[in-house]
Image 1 (cartoon, protein in one colour):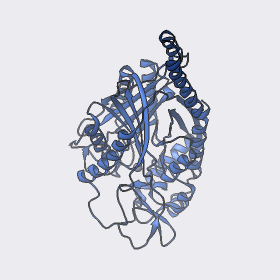
Image 2: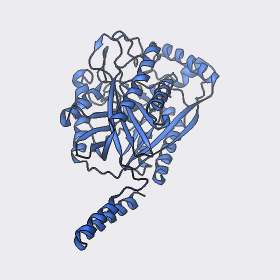
Image 3: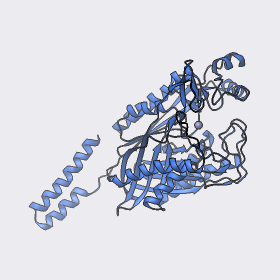
Image 4: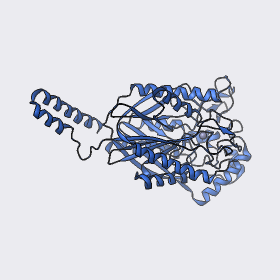
Length: 475
Ligand SMILES: [Zn+2]
């Protein structure tokens, strides 16, 4: 489809060129008009960017750790950054939010409000969490409590950003590209000498055999410029946990420095939407390197600047075109909650890693009881897989904290370049691992409200994602 469209466009340009050589002046004007007049389906693409502040009040709990963590200040504000695309027939929005997750109800509320206020269909909105571990109180995991007033505020601010982006939309051309940053992310799961898999088993642990999974170095970027060539904004996709800053200051974590780097390079007024990739098992900590200090401000800047510099390089070389079709397709899967064993003892025997992250049995049995209650209410969970096409870029979102290998599988099965795999999109259904990872064990697959889907669901999400991306070629 794409090659045919490019060909017909070339044909149009060639006929105009011919006309300028062969025809008298009056006829040329007519020929140009005929060649460039928009058809019924060729309404020019319009793109807009906007952002809203979603910083919670100081004192609110920062979710993401095993213990309560009341915030004591603001290192940098939290933002909702939205990009809006419309060609008169299809409108889409990509929204990046500085939060650890996007709870299901909050995602639906934000989408509903945006649809009511600016007409974009709720299902055409992708809202991704940056997965910052220094964000607002949206989640009741471990010891933390979600704040319902903050959830309502965040939903409204997400809708505000989408509405503002739609109001800011102007005629635009799209560019895209792919860079690589392979030096800031590391798989945090390791195959151990006893045959098990463990998460963060300790730096230089002599029982480590090898990493149990890959990383994904892709920095995928799409960008829009106005018809005068001014950059309006970009969307950046990279897979890495937001766990670098630590402490108790509110912050977007390393994506703060990513945005600062890009805006520093091309202009403070542009939009920068960050969408996290399949980073379920990817960290900034290199367990095979004895160096200390892979946390704090310096490390967050190192990561954000590195990814931002690659994104800037992609932006510098991007070629822009008005020929950027928009399409979307969505499928909702009813995925099973895992077998929870007959007793706590059996569950501990099956899942307790003994060492590394996730080895506190008391904490996890409290969580397992909550998952049992969840399963008693419903044995399946609805999971939305949403695939979009913007020009030659494919974007596919799902609410899992997806393992990196599954993200790479999706990319291998996608006809689009670049392909952005967006995790924690439009909801939250916990870690989703490869079937092999469930057998090996470790933190991410231990039953808790952060991990409850059955083995096999990861492959289902990956296969559905690749299939939907392929279907977009027909649209
Ligand atoms: Zn995580």
